[in-house]
Amino acid sequence: MEPAAPRLELMARFEVALGQSPWELGQTTALGRRRIIPITGGRFHGPLLNGEILDNGADWQVVTQAGVAIIDTRYLLRLEDGALSYLQTRGFRHGPADVIAALARGEEVDPARYYFRVTLQFETASANFGWLNHTLALGSALRRADAVIYDAYVVR
Image 1 (cartoon, one colour):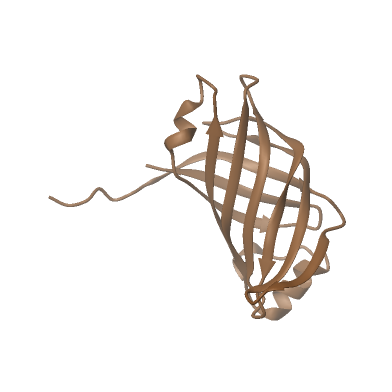
Image 2: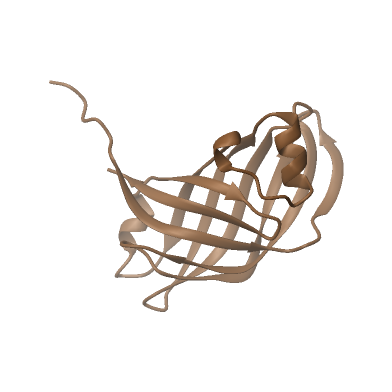
């Protein structure tokens, strides 16, 4: 017998609106510089999940000296049945220094030029979407000046 090979199924595309002014806390740990980027809204739509992102969250990210952004978002969703869901993503964004500098200036950069991946973990009391509470999901993301967009996939 062999372990089952995982497969990915598209859940939804997330369009996460970001506040224009991140809070820069500076070098708070030996790991790097802490910055907090407000999440101000957005939406998600796809074959398995639809709804809106509420103005209630942030990316509590740390940027290492090597320029790796350690992603740690926490925000609130309103699912299509009206129920709320907490969502936490964790992951990494990194790439060549010139590409990361272009992103920091708000320039559009081909997402194939940098690595931006997250895991998704949900919590909801929704009877319709309770399956989210015990499902692993992965996201492949891109950064825009005012948003993060990612396609989320259920790991089957």
